[in-house]
Length: 311
Image (cartoon, rainbow, N blue to C red; front, side, top):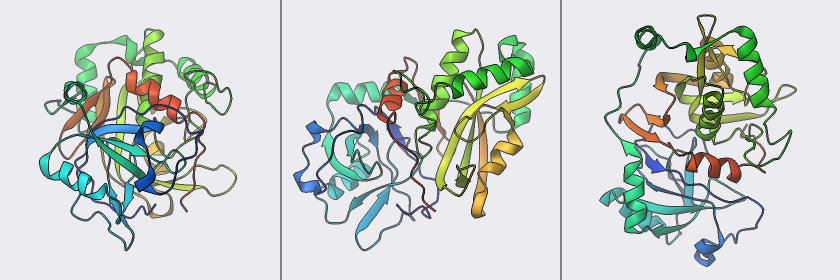
């Protein structure tokens, strides 16, 4: 998948990613039976003005996926996607379980599915655009649940790291070993574990042409259009909890610099309440997953996958 697409797009999608990646998918999209695949999202696709169209593929942003997805130019589903964009109508989008960026089928959704999708999106959330905005909010809340000692922060980080599917592939493990996508679900699951311990966090979103090296021994470069992780206060200093990229809590500056590998750039950041599952800073579109349905299904979907290096 080509990664140099990018003006950030307005993407409205409730990801309902289910299932596993164990079954082979037929590569000819005209022969795909969508009922045989559990890997899908329901959402409204919006294509940016400069999304790349090659001789064989057209790229889109689908739901809250961190990267672009594509469909072959001769696919019968290309017109369905364009109709979704034109009419503003959500659709069910199926992906190849072995090639998660590839759209293999599109299906119209039911009225109840569209109703549930609409219940989980809104546009009136007020974000914290700067760290100063966040600090002002915290000072007015006077909530100790956001404060961690160094020991508490390290212990929580290690507890989350040990829940990696690469270490113990138990139910609801966290797929830190698959860095290509799913940061929104990983962050939300960590937030739930904080809540279990009567703690809470904020979330930091970074947007841009993000590039990271996920390997500590060589080079495994991947690219994102955005990334998100929990944000906590450690002895009065904001730290990011991100076991997909680090081995310990790190400062915001260290976290952002990690995404500037090989010419990567961070265009902007946004600070959100922990209840926010996904946020698009261009449209002010906000998505939630209050019952963790999408979180659990996304974790299950990426449970067996491994990071695929792009460069």
